[in-house]
Image (tube, rainbow, N blue to C red; front, side, top):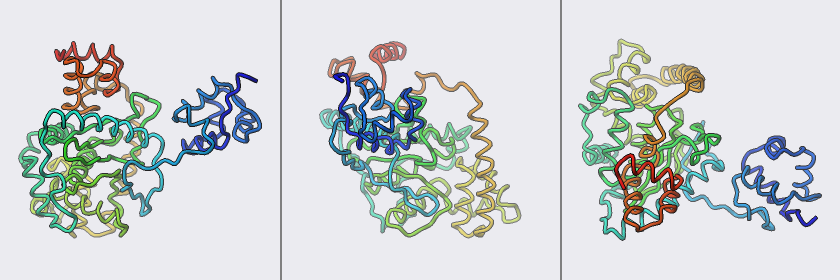
Length: 392
């Protein structure tokens, strides 16, 4: 049949497995019988062009991939720094790969723009190496961010403190993005169990991406953790897990970053002063998490590392929290509403990046459609947003 798409059966199967979809799910999404999809994967028959295009969309691959003789060799853009329950993860999901690719595309443009504008290199990128003293590095980062303990009291909650940290980071020339989904696709929600954030280091346009599916308090630690990576000029995908402490190459560096981030957010001197040995782990952690504006598990882990509590006390508290988190996630699913789309734009894209792209559009340095693509918008939405914000 002339309408048949002569696709590669082994590429089709590779794409389905890459997306971690069952054959039944893909059949349902394409509105065909399972038996027919199996025949496509076995090369016995071929889909129509319309069906092949639908397959490419569902499996999140370029349409042209289906016509390759063999599956493409995909190289990871970023190192994998994740460790979950003492095991390194081998592959990123399609969702994570797509988010990384999108951020890298934006970073490439922003880097060229900032170089052309004459921006200076950021002096603290790569200032230290992993053998340097953690306390010295933590002190330097806190001073560079101009982060003072008293500022936590000014912030009413974790969200305000997170926003304060983001603003401090962006004032230094760092670029912070946050989203809970791939692009604007509400059907592709990012899994916090897979990753909490990633960083792509660069002396001109270093970018940090925070998984917005994570809790507000947890994002604070992830943000500082990724900022620490920049002081080492290191890039990678992280999934901070306070249960583990293994000796693999990447986890060694992750532990170093965790140690420094913990000292920045929960200084040793201060927690030793505030921790009350007469009170339970739970009472101490829940009280001090509000004082330090971090999650209670960060406080408990810090207490464990400083030998204020023992192994059993920490893990008993940790698994009690896991049950609470599960209940909160269920309640969160039942809630509706949230910030307006326009309010999310600077959070999603980063304040400086958003402003610079819009300025380039209205200075006619780039086309409206190209600016909209960089921001994940339609040209009409970009024009409306710019008009509402008085940026055009």
